[in-house]
Image (cartoon, rainbow, N blue to C red; front, side, top):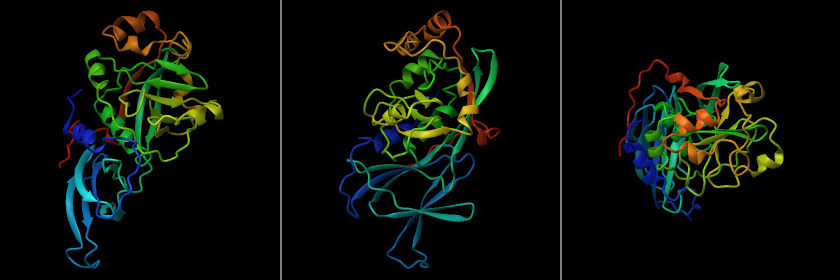
Length: 319
């Protein structure tokens, strides 16, 4: 996996203070906005709408940035209340960024009317006896920081070879500790800030990053399992880092999720399943998991479905 990119550095800068409360923003107060393009092959021309001029005036709309696909980005130094626009498939979309956090910062994915970006994970099931797949629909507007981070990790093949290390029926399935020691050690230190909550309820098949505190999300994610009680689902999201960013695509009850091996139970101290801290050790995948938990299921590979065949080149953004 490549070293921390300029995009990540910009995300860290513009997303500082994460889920801090909205400031009492006024028009023309400064606002820093990260605009991200996650489409597989569409370049987005982002325009600033100058309402000082009539709609037909040649100075009304000015090109601010041309944003490349597959994680391209543009960091804009703008003001609250300013409107931007971009065109997709013949339709112009207008967007006025919401007020930022305490540091006047905001993070947005430009996705038009798209419902989501589909990721397919090819996985082992029934204790590595068979191969199946899990389709994930990444929602661009629910938690954009989380969505962008997950898509970036998928494109970097971070989840390939990862174990389903915490599988508890009627509760959750958790994964996201890389097979390669140096990769998991490095990415463990690269946390993203919390997203602003959108009041999206947790349901079976809902996907969120896991965490251990405010602004602590790194690579581990969890999926709410079928049969989870309403009481439990209501508890998800009480922590600032638990914000839904995706769902299992299709009928979760008929998906491969229920076929993932769950015989080891929850992690310590709740039960005697795999200890994530030991998986992070240098011998986590070479000794600890295969000797102590040989029946675990694994992800073979994950990929963005619409990017298959497009090659591995990815474009960065610009300030």
